[in-house]
Length: 325
Image 1 (cartoon, rainbow, N blue to C red):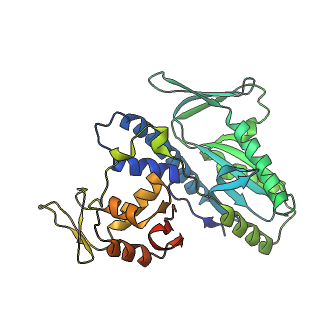
Image 2 (cartoon, one colour; image 1 turned 45 degrees about the vertical axis):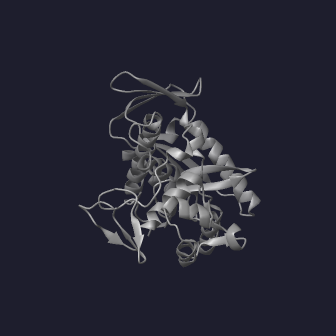
Image 3 (cartoon, helix red, strand yellow; image 1 turned 135 degrees about the vertical axis):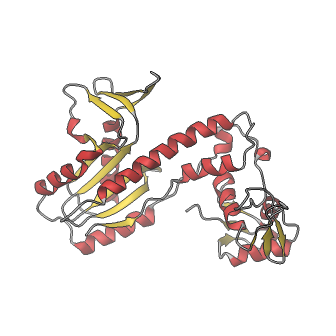
């Protein structure tokens, strides 16, 4: 039986872009740039979801499946779309959800994508990335005192309208497939590797360590897109009509839209998630009051303490840690 030990969720980057768009004026001059990156990130997530669907058809072999891992390596991090671990071998799968004509030329280390409108996008040969990640994961295993084991990598194109052409003589041609061949290729690997390297107990230990060392990424996207923090809409957004800010009355949030009047006591949770995604995971009582439009120090403190966030410091200088995932 195959088990998703770390199920797929939208990436922090995708959620960051979504949070900014939710709180950025539709006429803002930088909104188009954010939208373009949001659509790219969302397409990538769709590809990863398609990959998970294909993996659900695996039979007659036990894999532990970890999705979207970001692991430390020599002061930096590397990211894996999907990692399948078994007693026999590890398999890393990198999903590409691109449509159009895809040309991969190993002689110059390049991949070109030509869309229906003849627009051309240029990327690196994806096998360069999976080979680098393979090396990084091997080194991670050594640093964490795990024995080496057979390791395989695949680039899987998940979009139904992707026409993939690979240059003659590509040394890693067999690592590049469409998702329709995924189960067949994994079955071939199962036939290739028949000697167990790990016990199931060892696998569970490695799996727990991988999940423990997973570090969600956060990037200062406001700086990247040159958006003034003051341009970000503050306040609690009504989940029903999307009007902001909601007003807090008697421990409940009341929509300020007379034609809505939605009320709930948990509406600040999405707002705090937006804050963490846009401004970072640290927040103080004054920052919370300003963002949620709460005048009372005591009300803000009750909200923070009720959520059991980790914190450092005391009094007005106490800093709370908002979770990104």
